Image (cartoon, protein in one colour):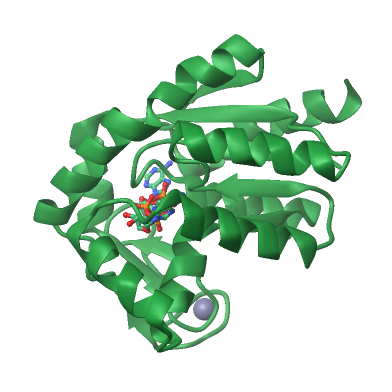
Amino acid sequence: MTNIILLGPPGAGKGTQARKLVEERGMVQLSTGDMLREARTSGTAMGRKVAAVMDGGGLVTDEIVIGLIEEKMKGSRGAGFIFDGFPRTLAQADALGAMLKRSGQRLDAVIEMRVDDEALVRRISGRFTCGNCGEVYHDQTRPTKKPGTCDVCGSTDMQRRADDNAESLKVRLMEYYKKTSPLIGYYYALGDLFTIDGLAEIGDVAKSLAGIVDQQAVS
Ligand code: ADP
Ligand code: ADP
Ligand code: ZN
């Protein structure tokens, strides 16, 4: 079991790399963004509450996200967890530490994916995903082989997120710097932090990540 956190601003490539680790290693991706998007389509009161916050680019309350993560962790089995987009606040980081401890598990590595703001704007504005299988694409850097058709599952249901616009990205980036970036210091102090160059090509980022995961798996 290797449990890792992918830490980085919106568009850093966390989801893209998490999916690779799932496919290649049988790890379990826990994306709070995906869980929240699922919740908002469920028509529940909680779903309605989170929808407005997400569209504005703000963070959903710690209580809601921690509850979602806790539930998913209990119901999942695999070769370790990849926390993708969680934790995003110090309170969430503390809660995750406590949850892992309670279940007799540990955090093996927190991997900070470093990408500059200018590149993030390009990444976010070109992002689209397959509505059927969730594969992540980009207009320039990772287009589908056949326009409008998913390489993985053949679906033609390509989607763009409502919050993937320049206005919302500004708010999301500010939220990242104010509330999430302190986690870099937090995990550094715990001795869990690794930093990789998220600006490299997808395959090269994957190699750096694999190196860290392999190293942690034996240690
Ligand atoms: P995050 O989950 O961190 O928000 P994504 O994995 O969704 O980021 O990636 C954001 C966008 O950038 C997507 O369109 C994805 O295809 C593209 N992308 C991801 N990694 C890279 C990379 N290393 N180089 C170029 N584009 C990338
Ligand atoms: P990105 O691809 O931009 O990193 P995510 O898909 O991870 O975005 O998250 C989309 C939105 O969902 C965030 O802007 C925020 O509103 C909400 N969200 C996701 N994860 C969390 C979290 N851990 N805490 C609070 N809000 C979250
Ligand atoms: Zn697909």
